[in-house]
Each structure stands twice: as structure tokens, then as C-alpha cells.
Image (cartoon, rainbow, N blue to C red):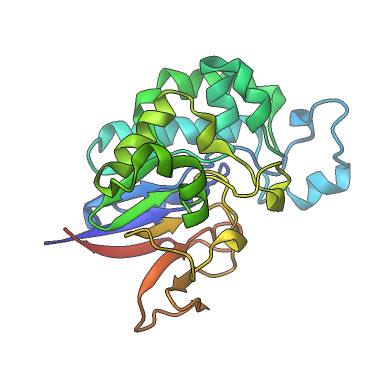
Length: 270
């Protein structure tokens, strides 16, 4: 049996997801980063942050105010509650600091990233944590796994192999347990993104970290996190293409909403 899925990459306050007709899909999978975006309103910029009036003018359309971000996240959560079994809400690296603000304050300082909105941190923390059970770190359907940034072979080997011991049938279940337990292993940041680690974990892996030659995990992964102008397909032989090719697929990079309104549709055999 085939299930029709649609993937919604990094929103950062955008509400284009409302264009999706839920009746047309079996699963609607969000990849996180619901919050943080260029400022749209000068009143939202905290005193001392390095933003100029010209920056606000440039972002007058694509930027978002605090109120827009907060309300959009609220609507996403209500959408999930309405279509509980159909809508999947994964979290991204920009969501984690607000979640940890209440769940694990000692961890928050290690996961706060650029764009963090101090002026609305308390409100976002409450909204995320009051609805914590609606979110997860990864979702699997058949041989396809969705997460914010993806799990590279190197990150798996370094952060999770010793615990999972290649029991891939329980991989996403265990990753979601780690999310509930506030595991730092989910939030490791590589030097490519300004971190101190060799490899980025499942919420932080940059597209440049994906190595087709070493990849042995038995999944196709659908991820966001690294902005692209077009949806990109990574194949087993290392080919990175904007086209669907007759080759073994490893990963799909879907974060295009910063330049266009486009979602990734994929039929999954189960």
C-alpha cells in the first residue's frame, strides 16, 4: 500500500502551510523551525541588538513580528490537534531553546541559536511546553525518516550507535524518547554551523556533512534546515541533483520556503 505524504519545511513564521488541503494527503509532516525570522517591526527588536532601520524595511514583507510568529505557531498546533493522526510536528533547532527554557534551563545555553527572540521567549516557551506532547524529533513511515536536519552516518556512529547497536527498527522510537529525556546528543552542533563538535546531530546537521560514500543507514531521509533555492536529491553515488533520477536515493533537502512556496510530495510504500 502507498501513502501520499507532503513535507512542510522550515516555516520561520510563514503561514503558506495553510495552502495545503489535508484531504489530499495521508500524512502532512512538518520539519520544525516554526519560529525565529528576520524582524518585520522595529518594536520587536530588543534594545542593543544589531538591527538597523534599513534592515526592517528590507524585511517588511518576508520578516515577521512577534505576534505573527506566535499566532502562526498556535494555528499549527491547532491544525495538529484537528488532524491528530495525519499531521506530524517535528521540531527544529530554532524551536529547541524555547522548549528547553522550561524543561531544562541548564541545557538552554548550549542550544540557543541566532535569531533567538528574547522579547517573546517566555510566551513561546509556554506555548511549546503546554503542547509538548504534540511534538517529536523524528517520524518514520516505511523506509523513510523525516527530521529537521537528518541523521548522517557519522552522527549516528558517534552519538547513537553505542546505545542502539544498529537496531534500526526502533531508531525513531528511541530518538523520540531521547527528546522527552532532554538529551544533548540530539542537539550537537558541528563547526560548520559555529559549534564545537565534529558532526551535527539530527537537529543541526548541515547539508555539507552528508557523505554518500559512508552512508549505510537503511533509510531515505527527508530533511530541512539548510536553505536551498530548489529541492535537492542526494543519491548513493554522491550525485546531488534538482531532478529525480533512476538511482538509489539517500536524502531529500526540502528547505525552500525562504525563496518560494513549494512543498515536497512523496509516496511511501508500507
